[in-house]
Image (tube, rainbow, N blue to C red):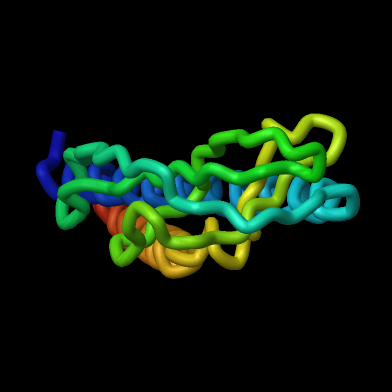
Length: 151
């Protein structure tokens, strides 16, 4: 098979993978935002205190590690709970305060405000979808031209 056709197919495949992953992130974030709209209608808020921080290491380039934050909060019945927060801020330390949103009927269930929890995802989604779309179009055009030139 012609090397140019193989290269064009590889670019198209890579573009499709990036595009699909970007769309996946978009759907996942949209679902979180939809769930948040329902959750916050009956949620209570409490001031929480960062109780511990776990470090998770990532193999992704430029990521290094991610701090997973846990906050203790007290519900309206005076019971103390610990929740894993759905966001990570490298500047937060044990003892810092945060707002915790919890289900009043099941106070152990919590959610984070999407404005905070998903703050870094908008750029990632945009880059993945844009880069993936452009690579797919360029690869498909090169593939079409390469195949057409062989006929």
